[in-house]
Length: 124
Image (cartoon, rainbow, N blue to C red; front, side, top):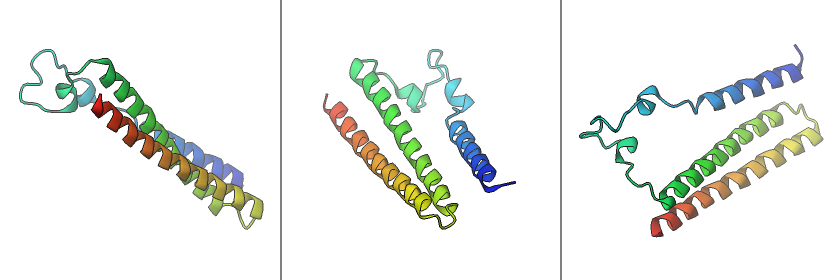
């Protein structure tokens, strides 16, 4: 098995792990808040009472920024793997370093955007 095949398999395993990390728990999805299941329960589905537009927009933007941060973290791992497997090739190592740097910049932007959006939504 050659090196490119091993790298491809590693990418596939990382992508599968990333996708599987977003599968919700059955208990959180199956919670029916309409039949008294929330009496004395302060979990997120039970505490969600705001259906105004600011709450909905804030939730959607927070989810998108979370996904952007998760993707940036995954790209950092991929860049690290590319850097390790560059085998002394200066061009491949440079591309891997640039991948890591750009992913870190994206992660910082996602974190800053998340905090700005939460601040604005809390003031609305």
